[in-house]
Length: 377
Image 1 (tube, rainbow, N blue to C red):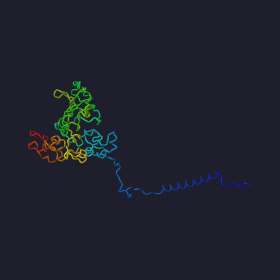
Image 2 (cartoon, rainbow, N blue to C red):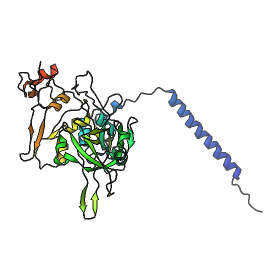
Image 3 (cartoon, rainbow, N blue to C red):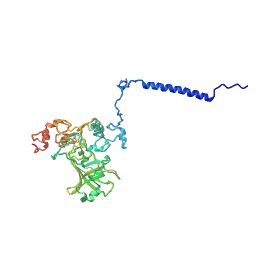
Image 4 (cartoon, rainbow, N blue to C red):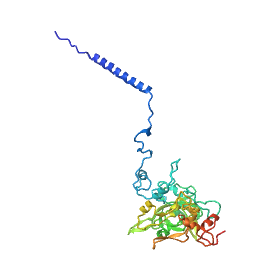
């Protein structure tokens, strides 16, 4: 007789597993329900023993390899290397912009930003001066800028070319014109270093294409206190068969006749813009110090673009910079003043450079010229 198999069948095993699972599920749900119904203490982060050592700044500290105030991730974004000194091509070095920039506490916008070329035209501290006495601060949209600054096209200016202006001067006479991506063939007095003085007039020559042997050339007159870069390179030969075409720039100005010849005038205004504040400074330290280190350590005589009166002597920076004439003496390595009016020196308030009996502060308040002995109350 065959012994009977006493092991449970497969169906019985399945039923036992289901019963066990149901019991476990019930226990878990009951525990959760009890936990939800019980009052719990509210967690306060400041009670943590790590609170004092925690970093509460929600903004991450981003790497800035060249120390110019622009994080590397932003400098790489336009496709430029991080060691470019003027990323947006506005003529103001990134070091300078980062140093003087102020962040709006509400909008979190920066007053100066190394990736925004338009801030060179702004005058945040409104320290310009009404020199012509018409009751307003005059301003023109004329400017010379590096082509890669990518300024939007101004609809008030007619886009043209050097060839068009030279070939049909009567058509454009007196009009506001725009030249895009033209080469500086002759950089005028830029080569002598006079660009550091915003108050002088500079004439440069530009061409459409420096490679053409029969190219037309046009004179551009940069008037005192016009918006212009601190450096322009002219065309030069760097090998027997190759040339450097000079700096590539954009120009907005008025096409007029001067001394029998047609030219573009880039007019200056009465606003003391950020770019003019940058261009008005001069270096006062050891000439052997590298320019990058000069920027890092702020070894310049410079005005604060966020403060209308940097030295606090009662005279605005724009007024002092316009009347304070000086030049760099390369032989002695010093800055020599023709008229001792310095927007970073409060002692000049009591000086009387034109010797008319009225000091600089009095002439500023009365609207007369401190460098003209016939101009006084």
